[in-house]
Image (cartoon, rainbow, N blue to C red):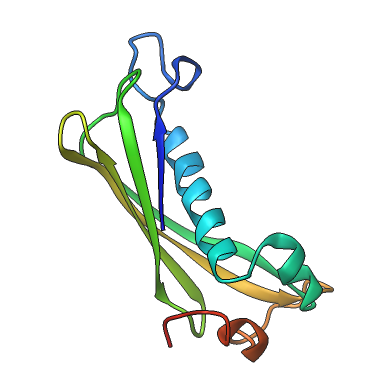
Length: 130
């Protein structure tokens, strides 16, 4: 799943460089679309009696993004059990360089917040990678 955007003025520091925390927001945009594409939007996850939480995050910056740079954030499932791992790439089409790469790891809980030892079947059957 790829989401395209452009670095906005409010996402930059005074020097016009994208603030490092914005990369996580761009990850989240792509992850939200990825989960929606397999029928796992927030209301659907809750409807299955579950919640998901990010339990680990890795982000490697490779080349800075600047004001008005076009960016494409791609997210895909790297693993689905026992935890769900989502991989990301952020590409700057103006400079034709990768700006960042990373992963988030999500754990699944029941509706009460009790951590489950593995991704439940109701969620696994919607995920493309086994």
